[in-house]
Structures are given as C-alpha cells and as structure tokens.
Amino acid sequence: MPPAEYAARRRELMQLIGDEGIAIIPAATEKVRNRDVHYPFRQDSDFRYLTGFPEPDAVAVLVPGREQGAYLLFCRERNPEREVWDGPRAGQEGAVRDYGADDAFPIDDIDDILPGLMEGRERVHYTMGLDKVFDQRVIDWARQVRGRTRGARRGPDEFIALEHHLHEMRLIKRPAELDCMRRAARVTGKAHRRAMQACRPGMMEYELEAEFLAAFRRAGGEPAYPSIVGGGGNGCVLHYILNRDKLRDGDLVLIDAGCELDGYAADVTRTFPVNGRFSAEQRALYEVVLAAQEAAIAAVTPGVSWNLAHERATETLVDGLLELGILDGSREQILEEESYKRFFMHRTGHWLGMDVHDVGDYRIDGQWRELEPGMTLTIEPGLYIAPESDGVAERWRGIGVRIEDDLLVTREGHENLTPDIPKAPDAIEALMVEARS
Image (cartoon, rainbow, N blue to C red; front, side):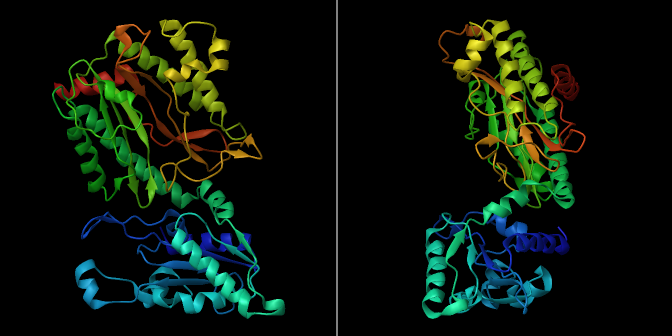
C-alpha cells in the first residue's frame, strides 16, 4: 500500500473530525501464548488502515490544524540489543521517513506529551472498550488537561467513538484496497482448487488444511481466520476448526478458508465429495444451496436493502427443503415461524475487508442500510442436516453444505471477486476426476 494512500485516509478522517477534535489510535499489543512464546503479532486494523505502521507499542495521534504537523506517532525507540533478538525497529526517525509521520516521539514519553496535544480541543475521538487500561489513561489525560487549564483553552469535555467516522470510511473500499482483495481472492481460489484435486478418502482433515497453509504462505499471506475443514457430520458444525478426523469415502467435506494478504481478507467456502462423486442426496441438497446462493448474488446491486440477499436465499432454501420433503407445511408459515432455522441458522453474508467480519453498520436508524458501490461482502447460504437430526430421513443426515463467494458492489451491480473456483456439481466432479486420472 503506497504511503500516499495512508495519507489520504488520514486527511479524510481529519476533515470529518474537524479542528476542534483529536483522534487517538493505539496499535495492537503482543500477546503471550505460553511462557516466552508470543502469538504471531497482527496489527490492529484501524491503526494499520491509517498508518501502515507494523509494530506494537505504538499510538497514532491526529490533531487537525496543528501548525507543527497534524500526524504524530508514538513508538518504540531503536534498541540495538533488542533488535538482535526481535528484528529492526523503525524508531522515531523511521516513523517520519518511512511511515509519513509529521513528528514522532518515544512511546515512553506519551504521558508527558499527549495531554498538551489535547489542550484547546473540545472532543476526543477514541474507541473505548478494547483495552480498559489504555481507556483509563486516555480519560486521565483529559482530566489532567481540564484540571490545569482555564478559559477558552480548556481541555476536551466530550468523547466520541472513533468508529463513527472511521468504520464508515473502511466500509467503502478504495481502489488500492480492492487490488489487495482481488489478490487475496486469487490466492484463495488456487488453494481451494488444489484442495479439490488433492482430496482422497482416508486423508485427515488437517492434511487438506495444510494445502491452504502452504498456498497462503507461498504467496506471502496467512490464513485470514482458522480454516474450517469438516468432513461428514463435522460440516454441520458452523465453526468447526479441530480438523482432526479422517475423511471418509462417501462423505462431503466442507472447507471454509481464506487468505489474508497485505492486511485484507478473502473468505470462501466450498463443499465437495471426498471421493469425487456426489451421491443423489448430496447433489440434491447441494443444488438447493447453489440455487439459493445464485438468487442472493443476483440481489446484490446498489440501492437495495442489505437484507434482500438474505431474504432471497432463505426463500429459495425453504422451497428446496419443501420439495425434498425435509420440511412440511406452507412456505409462508415456515418463513414466518422461522422453522427453517433448524437447518439454516446463520445470516447469508457479512462485510469483508481488513477484518474477515469487517466493520460497518448493517442498520441505520433501525432500518437495513442500502448497498453502495465500493462495499464488499460475502454471500454464503448453507444447509446443515446434523447426524442426530430427529424427524429427518436417514439418507439426509450428516450432510452439511455451504457455498460462499466474495462480492464487490459496483455502480452497475456487482463483481464476484472469487469466480474461478468451481461450484457447479458437474464442474467440481470434472476437476476432481481429472486430478485422479
């Protein structure tokens, strides 16, 4: 992501905040996994969106209209001894030179410097609730300023949630972001196709997961979330991530896996037969889900309700379950009573971006918001007939199907960011049979 992109984002946010406000954005902190081992560090998405700065123990401060420079970065100092162990640090010089800060200070000096930046500001834009310790520091800084100032230059007396502006900015993707998302989608697509080709009865679920880990790392990415590889009844567990069972001949396997590349996520699900051939029952349920996804995708266009795609998918799923005899009653009654939720218990999609479940309100003033060009979302209907489903014929049990693609809302309608991963039953079978020949 070029530095100019981050600068443009900061300018936009500062215009929204105004000269009476100050924004404080802390970086993520390192988390201990066990004893001297840390979890892999992943930067806070809001902080990265505005700065591109990759290190922990940092705080970005935006002070619109400040003559000496509006973008300040508090970060770790250079430390040759620690850098031998942990790698190079940017330090204050690098924060200015490489990351566009107007000025930079040691993170240990923040208590002395930041209160002075608050003087004369009426509002603090900050996200409360993510780190109680840092929340209290921000509150104490504001109290300190108010306690020592008088008259027109009093300190801030109002806290405003930073995400009110920032998350609306993140919801509408800029061209540079879409380039990242398309690349993440391409890497994800190759991994899903490879998994279909590699799958054999008797493999372990984690062996298929390894295909995704290898593909993502070869591209310089990483999993955007723990991969779901569920064979048979495990495919009916929505967030199954154990991935430890053997894939059995005659079962389906549901894989929900996406790559994060340069801070942006893909999120794709495919379901296919372990042995390369759908049974009659598997194909019947699969085609219902595929029809529901196609109906939902067709509903993605600017100006329509966010919920329309879910409504179209749900109606199609209910029609299919009635036709197969898995549900009884009238379509209207089933939809009204939501009795279908026994087999389809989640929404049809979510926002997608830097976070796999990305930021942005789904409702505005209590009403579903309208889709706009630049929004990115998933479409992922599913059906899950758990092995222990009472009142369902045995031949349907243990079949879980979900199909998910990533979409961009355009001025004309939509763009499927993940179009090259087979999902028609015949196309899946052809790819898998070809790999075995």
